[in-house]
Length: 251
Image (cartoon, rainbow, N blue to C red; front, side, top):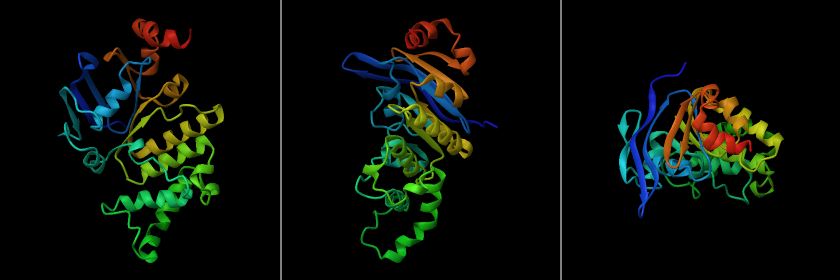
């Protein structure tokens, strides 16, 4: 069952030389849920993500994670707290295999260097957990394949595996199914549902079919402001949402 609020923003605002990209956004994500952030192009979704993980500094407002004010914290510190945005550690090494990429992400979770100069016996300690992660994202058959040779959808699965290696309490996924064929969309949708069983997910996603299948709560942004919030059934019927987002998507 969904728990208490794990991530909250109060009056979150970002201005760029007079242009307000995000205006007074109040967001509350409940623990153990999948929460989607949607809206038309230019709505402020990616800016919100960048603010939450402090790749951008808010002009004003507050961000709280597990009751702690994280406004102004460094991205690496936020990740160590358990709030991980996929791209922070999903820039995979193209010439390394799937298994090697996941093992490097596990090594990083130690909180030290990547341990490139450690004895092989030390690194072997990550083997069991590495194989479990590779299997969890459906990449066992690709374990020895260099990342550069992976089909696009499988590469996104690898990125999710490297995110999971940091053992996040909450994952932020920025358009996880963008650019995928239908078969890959179905696979990644199922994967997100699987990895969300024991954690919270906040995602930006344009594919409304994916949003409807996965999301417990949807927040709709338009012109940097919250337009509506609720489950898919209520949000999809909201007149302002139909006009600002759904209507354009189905035009």
